[in-house]
Length: 152
Image 1 (cartoon, one colour):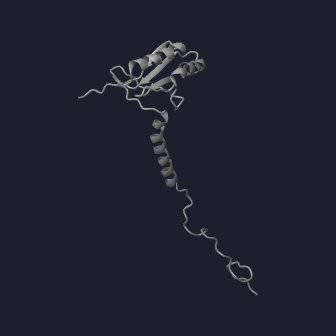
Image 2 (cartoon, rainbow, N blue to C red; image 1 turned 30 degrees about the horizontal axis):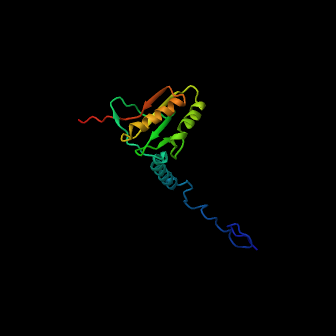
Image 3 (cartoon, rainbow, N blue to C red; image 1 turned 90 degrees about the vertical axis):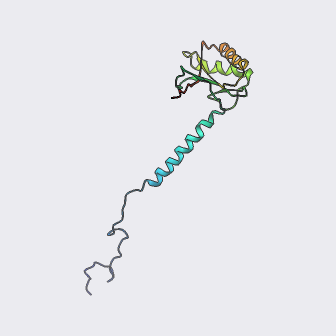
């Protein structure tokens, strides 16, 4: 009994392992992962502005500055409802001073409130917000506006 030169067991050659001698590319294909990530990014970009819970069409001002992230902002929509950036639901007028007091207790060095009111809201509603802010210990109130677009 002679062994074949192929090195077999029981006279038959060893089976070939798939891909051992072929030209298979072992690199990971990242294109599907990139596609999924781009879709997720677009979804978050679309949904994030809607999480604020209200929409306010801001008035324009020539001295408007860009919005900063680390601050307490009180929003007032066109219907006169109050919103805090931390709460997506409207805050009742009677609870507004209490919420602001709790927020400023966590930031003892910060006594500035930024007000983002719709341009069509009544002046009395803005005064209600100012009164609640003063009751909460706010020393300065900044009004958030859109910059004036100059026509050329």
